[in-house]
Length: 557
Image (cartoon, rainbow, N blue to C red):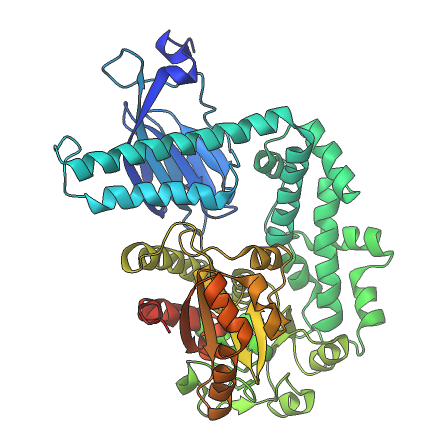
């Protein structure tokens, strides 16, 4: 396509006018369309969804932006979730021209994922623009009013900063090929670990990385020591080993669960990797030969849930006959649902579970010894306790045949969360928050788990640097000494405590310590005190927390 003279001008020859900012989800069989005058920039807030842009398929990449020219169409197809996005729409005017450009311009890299950093700054630009427009939603852009004029002027400046950040990210990718390319490879490795159960092709990974095939394969091997497909298969086979050792599920079920559609191909790859076929591996490493029952987990009426899996299971419409209630019975918000439920001990005692004669055990991994003992009782599905909440929920849901229900809940919850932060709660740009939970006088700071999962959102609070490092290293929480609090200084502190006399006494001691007073003087903060029951991250707790969050934020101490 030949570009006109106007479309080939250098970037500084254009001015930009922001006309609309929106956030939402793209529902199935619907589309977003730019008109013939409107350019746009979309920012994706979730990984791994499939969208079609101008009839070309793309896989969404969390935190990445893409420029779209006029007359563009975005559609959501063949995915069980609804992609979450920001869309910034704008006009472009060439110097001396009265009408907006109606064609792509040479200076913008359309249809390419860009990774502007830091993401917190990008979100600040967009959220601030959104607030400017929301505050004058009923006003005409041509209305003569000083405040409206100033806000539109500010929005246009922020739009230019946003575009500049995106273009600078492209420049960095071009000028320093090696480091960004390795970062792109690492992103695809993270994607494999999260979605290994789904069909993944090298073409998917290439598209996700934005690299050429030869460069991608070379750098992938340099980073991991393996070819992409071999790496995917190794991840799947290692997960299959756990299931073969710790559960009573058939080889066919395990093959399907870890991402192999063909049981025989799975057996061949497993034999190549381990030197023995799956059945022989099971008999060699399982303490007792599994009874290959024809009973299907999706029909199991008698379920036991160990550890903190209870809230996830209840949210999927399954009421276990037994659960680990010793500690959490008086802490969770769904206490009414625990009536007449059998307590199996803090971690799930095999003897107590065996008495219940369960059909399925959903087990939060503690040790191999406990897991093998449970596998002797009934088919056992193992969950790793520090897996991110959405991964944990999806894994359980898929195993009990409720995968679509889990995806629908996650999508709806994301939309509701956006609405709460956007409409109900006013926070400053870049405002940081720290979550502390006090247990028997000991202090724990939270990473991206529990209560923190709700407040650390792209459109909400930012974690302080020390907590950001914990989240990057996937550390769910960390016990700290009281004198270490200054290292975690934030604009707001959420302190989670129980209401018993002992906990309140510890709270009094904390807030009267010299380190607390120093923190208030040198790094003033708003303190919000709420109950520790909100530190669970199951769907039931998270849904209720959204409804009370505005009230929690209204009260400061």
